[in-house]
Amino acid sequence: MKNAEKLIYQVCRDYWEIKINEIFYCNRISGAKPYLNSTFGDGTDFFNGNPIINYHFAKTGKAIRIIQEEPNPKDLEISSWIDKFDTDDIEAKELVISLQLTPHSEKTAFELIKKWIVEDYSSKKMERFIEVKLEKIEFSDYMTEQICLT
Image: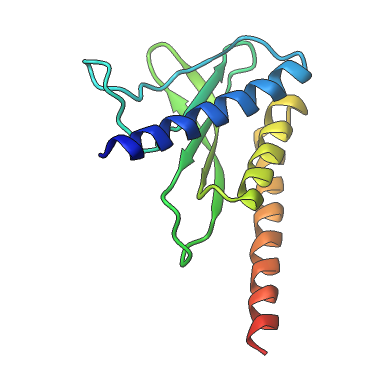
């Protein structure tokens, strides 16, 4: 990986950290700690975007993992799901958001994070919200595409 690509990657990671910590601060949420390793034994970053950022909340047993994908105009720009994360030290229900960073996907990601952490949606309620939210996005994208083709 070239130095310029590493710099861009670090800027993206810093951006996510700042924006998510802003949500935590504004909503008086504390105790968030990274739970996934994103470096090799020598401290060198994986630079693979999975995760670009992650937080675990021991008090609630919830976690957030953001996977930032390379931009690809032929792919969906965002997907999300609830997963179970379980190790010897941590057991959590994890909100996973995989996206290509665009203004639209960023807005959706922060909306999902707020529902999961700030509004404390249950797993079942969150799964329904994700389904409706992402279905709405896909339909909107489809309609835009149809309008542009006519």
